[in-house]
Length: 391
Image (cartoon, rainbow, N blue to C red; front, side, top):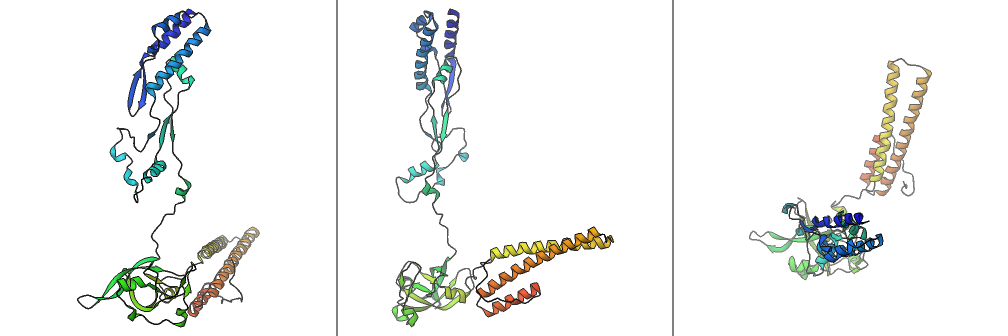
């Protein structure tokens, strides 16, 4: 027993050169031998039974835990945003310049830290780790890296982009330059395809920016005097009407003497309504046939592929003078497959053109569609009465 105890004592004393990483690129050496005071050695040598040895080792483990906690314990929270290793080049470090702080909110930076920061926590040493340290077995500190989850409202934030339907335009004002030309003023123009009331101009923009007065206002028609209700349910009764000339900076088109209704609401400068959009072809008619066109392309490709395979096989049979029953049966099956693909394609094509013709009100466009269909199929397009076909 004494030899075993002596071996354990030497193993404990041999831990005098244990080097541990305490973080931030620093290393520190501490000794477990300092735990073995003179009275401990005397008590150790007096142990004559395993229970005594076990009790002693337990006492040593407790003191070793206290010493290890004092020397090795790292900060409980190290933010990877604010603490960087000196070995990392400045160009490779993450910069706080990627965070744009809008407004003067003292709590904003804390919120950003909770979203982008990572936290390194040192887990507590277990009793088994301390027991291994007694026998000079070091497993190193356990680091737990946690990334806080983003709050749900952060994930659902809408990314606001510039709308292509709100454009800067220039409107001729009443002011003139040295050459007596009207000076254009910039305005924010909204293209509103759902506005059936008419074009609208803000009274504030009209008077304060363009320099018009009530003497320039025109009378309203009976329909315009009744006003209209917007999509939000607000009633708009114009103060009058006026004719304005405007243009877009990147366009060669000039819209002269366009009629605008004068509104008291200052939230916008100009609004172009649906009638002017369609009349002046500012926007194309919405294309709701994109899905149908893709389906037609697939059916057409299938028909053409089947026809090509049939023709290639027919030519090969003629060249080889192959008139066997097997070849004739194969050609017959390929011909039926080609004809079936052609029939499906033509039926779908007819349905698409029927729907489009029923939705178009322009007679010239209807005639063009009929001619186009006849040129593609060699047949005249017969429109069945009723509502558009539902694909």
